[in-house]
Amino acid sequence: MKIAFFGTKDYDKLWFEPLTRDKGEGTYNSDIYFFEANLTKETAILAKGYDAVCAFVNSDCSRPVLKTFQELGIKLLLLRCAGFNQVDLNAAKEYGITVLRVPGYSPEAVAEHAMALALSANRRIHKAYSKVRNNDFSLSGLLGWNLFHGTAGIIGTGKIGVAMARICKGFGMNVLAYDTYENPDLRDLVTYVSLEELLKRSDLVSLHCPLFPSTYHMINRDTIALMKDTAILVNTSRGGLIDTEALIEALKAKKFSAVGLDVYEDEDELVYENHFSDIITNETVARLLMFPQVVITSHQAFFTREALQAIAVTTMENVYAFEHGLPLVNEVKQ
Image (cartoon, rainbow, N blue to C red; front, side, top):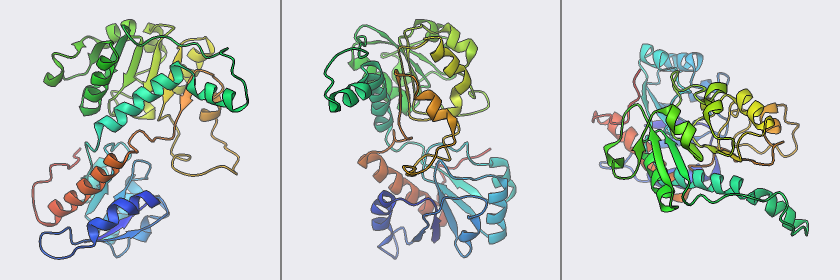
């Protein structure tokens, strides 16, 4: 198969290229052309002459893009990520395009980053680093609190939520969990409660759920009001889970002792690109960074060697299954 790979970074080539070198029976038997341009309505036409398209979490997979794919005869959309909220699944079904994703590449990578954000924001590591670099060794503004014996609230108990629950348990925390479906693997590790009870009791709230209409802005003015003023809030899932305006209002009112965000609303125009010399017109990041207890990273929770390797292998396994008529275990359906 010929695959048009959009939004290419150096690390993508590092992990994907070795998997396409071998040709013949039993191999992935594919050719990948790496486009640096991200997938948009304007760049979709670059997929002309290819059999499949490989896109990422910040790609535009809306109806107009998928319509272009249909006109080009493309039948396969490969998502090298777990999330699929960027894909118009109704359009994909209508145009006969199969969508395959990577549902679980390295849950531990994301969970470890979530805890790193919680610790960094709580203990003001970002501020301490800057102070020491400027020869300021005072402790003012760096006070945090012990996670030990605190209560962690895990919202979403899939593989990443399970990994986060184990980490929190290792820190000596009492772990509460909320999900529409209880995970039997967590029976001896967490206590399932209602969302309202979790928010009221938790010292650390970590989000690990997909972005659906039912979860959009699940952290809003009403749910924030339920939370402790001293709570830590961490989001490594999808920016749309948190109502940014409500979060900023809460921060202004001195709510939350710490906030760690790897994702946030309106991130797509910034994420994975170097804007060092640019004037950033997106106000979301600037407003959030006004608050000393907020730490923001660039949607990098997945970014470990193990995760990148798993993403590449699973993506190519998806190609192999599609091409050989095998069960499509990672298909995304409406």
